[in-house]
Each structure stands twice: as C-alpha cells, then as structure tokens.
Length: 430
Image (cartoon, rainbow, N blue to C red; front, side, top):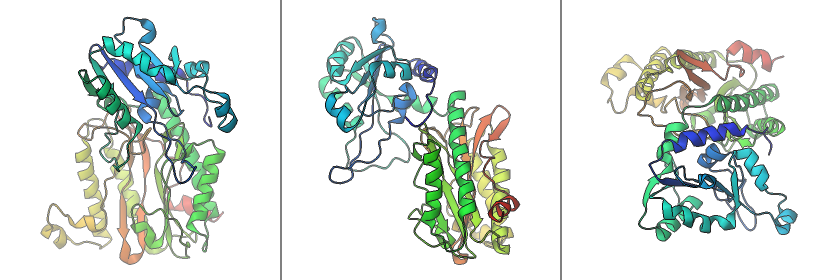
C-alpha cells in the first residue's frame, strides 16, 4: 500500500463501537466494493467500501467481514474472509494479502479464505436471528441500473435465509463515522498537508497561457509523490467564467491574463480525504474587482466558520451563512434591498449569485455520512465553503477550509493553504 500502516487498534475500537449498537443475537455482513470495468479488458482503480474499511482496515477487493458478537464460540465473533492467492494471480496481478497480513492490519484473529464463506455463514445464521447488511444509503448517492456487490449479497442472503430478520449496517455507521477518532484526524491532516504542498506547486506554476489541465498535473504529481491513493474527487481547475459552473472539471481551457482561477481539490490519503478550494489570479495580481469579490467571500468564510461549533443545527448554520453572503452581495451591488424585500422566500434574491450549501461532513467520503438533522458535535470534521458567482463578469469565487469541531469551537485544519490576498500574490511573484 502507498500509505503508512494504520494501527489495528483503530479498527478494533471501531468494531467494538459498532457491535455495541447491534441488536441482540445478530450478525453483520460487510462486503468489498466491485472492481469497475471501463472497456475491453481494462478496469478503473479499485476503491474500497468505506464501511468495510472503517471496521477492518482491509483495502483489498473481494473481502468480506462477518461480525457476530453474541456467538457462543469466541473464534467466530469476528471473521474476515479474503481472496486466496494462487500462482496465476501472483503472475498476473502480484501478491494478495496473506492471512497473517490481514490479521495484522485488521486485528481480526480469525481469517479465512473466500471460498469458505458460504459454509461458515450457514453455521452462524443457524444461531442468529438478525442479519445486518450494507447498502449505499447516502443522501446524495447516484443510482444507476447497475448492480453492486452489496445488492447481490442482499439478494443472496434473502433467498438463502428468507425467514431471518434484516437490518441496515448504515443505520449504525452513520452514527459512528461522523465523530472522528484521533487516528482518523491524523489521517485527514495528512491528506490536507499533501493538498497544501500541491497548492504551492500550482501557485508557482500558474502564468497566462497555461492550460487548466497543466495545473491539474501539478496537483497529481504532488499527490502521487506523497503517497496519496488518488484525488479525493475529480479536481476542479476553473479559470474565468468556468468558475461559475459549480462542478466544472473538464479542465481543458487556457488560463488567460486577467482571469481568476477557482481550484477545488483534495488528496485522498489512506482512504481519508481533504476538500479545499482556493482562488487566485492567473497573472499573480488580483484586479480591483477580483479583490472586492474575493475579500467578500473570505470575510464570509472567516465569520461563517465561527458558527461551526457544538450544539448548532446544520439548518441554522446554513441560514446564518446565507445571511452573511447576502450582506456581501448588497455591498458588491449585485442585489438590492428592494429585491430582498420583494423576494419569494423559496427563491431568495441571493440565490442568483450563491446557490449551494456551505458545510458537509468530511472523512472516508468527501461528502461523508452523517445526519444533518443532528447538531454539530465535538470530533466532527466539516467544511465551510461560501462562494459568489458572477457569470456576467466572468468571476466565480469559492473558498473552502476543513474544520475540526472541538468542545469550545473549532480548529481550522487547512491553515497551511495560503488564503490571504497578500500571501497568494507573494508566492506567485517570488
């Protein structure tokens, strides 16, 4: 693996917390993600199922974890099933995890080979009353007519064990994963540190005439060099008016003198993600108008991030953040008091220039699991990302930091990424 070994104590602790919330005499089955194909005989890079990784640390395809805390045999309270390595696999793909390696990574004492799963499960299911199964229940999940390994496991279990009760893994992990442990915070910090070094490379490489994808290449270089697994998401390198398209990521335009670049990106390190956005002038000097818009957004970030503290409901936070942006839009003369007074509450005037939310959970997923009906709590890691987008002026500006909620407020984990106008100009013109 590219990243440094993670102490198995993290995954042992996660399993203890998970099983403590399971129903009596129940077992849980967590499966790895599929390896996705492109065309012909090629495949995309493998990304592990994050609930399985959270509970085992196993980053290998075709893995299965079974948890049965009430089992009468100590040896079957936790069982990990992994792919069996053979000479053919060694020749074409390289080594897979051995049982001993899987034990060391996960802290699971009982490791079996994948072909033993069905027989082993039958003995567990004979005793158990409830089976927990995983599925992608994220509020923003994208669904296709595409069956997943989780779908197949659900269908197989219900066919084989139709009279059992069933419950959802996600109901438990969505309670646990939002509160990060010290080990997880350390991994997120490393992802952000890699992103900071990548941003420094981008600032020093930017000049009029450079392609957006050349700046993307600077990010990719630093991520690869630093042992990141991949980009946290497709990076947005949007110059000029492209920055007004929120999810622009073709990154194929020329960065022109006088334009500003919006860079939304992050590293994925050990499956934990960073998510940061910065804006900067192509020629190294903010114009008067760019300065005004940038300063307005930065002011919203500084004030809005103070709202990220324990006990605050996400909906209240978003309302207060929107009010901050609305005030700045008035100062920039983009909207008027009359428009605000006459607005439809379901379509407020500010939405013309600011149309997205500004805080989401961050962790194993960039938009990490969590219930937005629950107040912020210590240990959560959240983004703060206000923005102002003015298509008619070719200016789009969003600034985003990652914050750790603490007992008395929050800590900005993204401080290493320059954000003050003077600091950015100094780096670009050194």
